[in-house]
Image (spheres, rainbow, N blue to C red):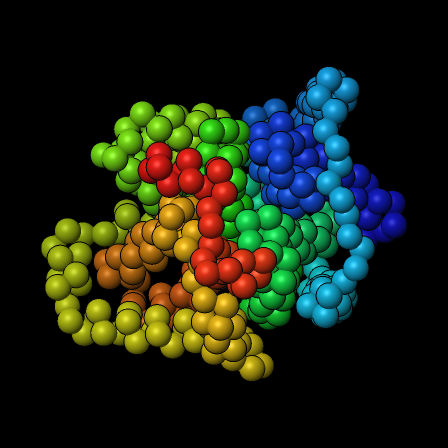
Length: 466
């Protein structure tokens, strides 16, 4: 890849990130730091850019620049009308901060080396995702007639459309574009985890959890390999983080829920597993309906507003373009019942799940025991039991995991083959969000010396309204 192409790809990243930043600053709570908006910006901007590419295709430059100009003018006008003091910035780094900075630098260096040596990515990258990107980039208006005959032509098109978009910016099909996209998503997941926990708990806990994520080799490897698993993981953690920010920080403001709906929709536009995540999130948001229906419906309406555009694109793609989902197409009722009632099948799935949960990260040293020991020493804060945020995240992950289990039960693919080829990747979808939920359950450092966590005004309102 030439330096000119690299520069133009960087411009493409800058445009999408700025779009994401402006959208995020309009919707996140005003009390939140700018760092929070920048953490969500790459994923939000990528989701928006993918939808723009899918809907408009050829005039994407005109549409993106027009939107960027419009948002920038709105941002400047808002800044002039509502001047808010910038939050103080501390440049002092703790030991955890220094270690995390070194880990990020080392990870980026290793990922760039991997991208240079394997520019086309791993198997699924060139067999599925980049093949779809080439149809989007080369095939003009007829792409929808031909993509259905590719490998897994029913797979959603967020990552292929983003890769094709970067090729449009570069003026060539630079194979490294997909790797750079994966690196961006991997680092974005770390940023969302770090920024959210530093806002809702404390910086030390945030740095530890971010270090755990950047220190997960399989998470980084899936990102640079140009698979869609890491982008899905990032949209998952972004959605849960935004829901928690709404519930714990400012439950009277519904902007974060609108943005959460958008990122959940982007998860569904990334992989079919994201559709299960959308369903799980909707269920959890509606759970408090019997306790406080008015607030619950307002929350769900806000979430649905953000979900509307990506869900419309997904529906159009699934109904008008994509072939039937192969797992459903090959499913037979009697065979499914036999599989569900097979004790041996349950045993195989549970055994594989237990083994993969321990080893899926490809760690040189197992970090689970030290991690849980640290959380145990911190203790669980009372706000965990007062706030619906942490429990909401845990319930969403539990429903998604139960859905994965159900798919393995009924899959027409040979069970062990299906488990060996996909289970580790499915756990990567949930890993960043699990670290976030685990961090939210720990007591904040600033409150360790007190007899308990005293909820703030926003948290108490949220507890009373759930």
